[in-house]
Length: 417
Ligand SMILES: Nc1ncnc2c1ncn2[C@@H]1O[C@H](COP(=O)(O)OP(=O)(O)O)[C@@H](O)[C@H]1O
Ligand SMILES: O=P(O)(O)OC[C@H]1O[C@](O)(COP(=O)(O)O)[C@@H](O)[C@@H]1O
Ligand SMILES: [Mg+2]
Image 1 (cartoon, rainbow, N blue to C red):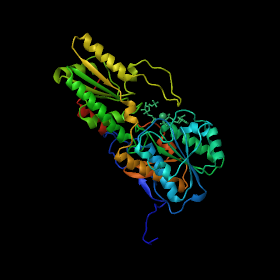
Image 2 (image 1 turned 30 degrees about the horizontal axis):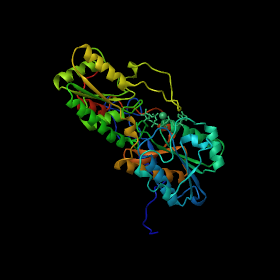
Image 3 (image 1 turned 90 degrees about the vertical axis):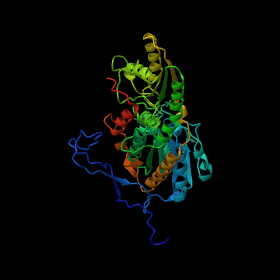
Image 4 (image 1 turned 120 degrees about the vertical axis):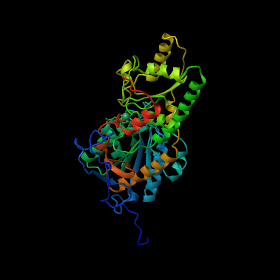
């Protein structure tokens, strides 16, 4: 190799975690490390290939698993992990089917992966390996990792999956197994801390435009039309906020982080009356986790322990219909719930690039000898982060952030209090 080749990332390279120095905690969207906002430098490891690697590629067996719900780009990440492992010289690569369940449900065999098998999988949405919720029995999973003789495990999933991956990492350490557990954050809701954005989010925002545009056309064409679109986001309103901003046609954007009243002089319904009176139609975009306080809560959870939400879309639809009937004003409500149509699509161009970078960096991280880490973009730089740091809490839209204020400026909606 030519002498001037500088392709390796130095082990001591670091990226700065926070790049804005907020003068005061009251500055819009201030995200301070210390309560008084003194400047604290926090550095994180730069992602990328190392000169010294900690595994002999020809003896490595690597596994890939995809957990939780679907997200555009899963196949792109799987594919890049396989291509990068092969580039290192790894020959034994397997896929674990249907999330953590694949480790111990006997009928779910390992899928042998290589460049030929994964060549075209990025052309479709979904997960080539299948996904599932529940089934995170850590001790059984680590037994299975041992029995399969895995040296590396790439775990693609969201907050829950990363909590599981970290427990797997800790159990492997306890058993003194030299297995590298590396996460790749998959969350369409964009709800993982410290990262600029997660893969699939851009695609979801783009896919949501079709639903919003249809709702707009329906509402605009009807007499006193009201278009309502419900988008994903259990506790984080990023998809709804960004989709509303992107559309530019949304009059009311409702997210879980910002409570709202429906009735009364400052409520959503009164504002809808105003919109019908002044422009003749209205468009609402609501996140699935918004306004849960208005609904009857169930204690039900899904297999992963996530709360099953009540349907805010149906509730809003009914409230709007009965409200306009009560006040004797005609309205024509059209409700669109595009949830799975938004999620089950292939990654767009920018997400495909993000997936490529993340998949490659996950493999570089494992070969660098890291475990219990995940990889993401931080202030436009690609980094490795310890899993516990990114799952301390769910990343939420800050109602004091510039982005939420921009969204309010764009919709023109008042404070619904
Ligand atoms: N706190 C947790 N600790 C360990 N495993 C978890 C935890 N929460 C969820 N899991 C497991 O992680 C997997 C995916 O979780 P889920 O919440 O459905 O999706 P996501 O990872 O996208 O948040 C499931 O197999 C689930 O059982
Ligand atoms: O119907 P499912 O598969 O449980 O998925 C619905 C949920 O999945 C999500 O898209 C996010 O799922 P993940 O946390 O697994 O990424 C939520 O926004 C939505 O509530
Ligand atoms: Mg979860």
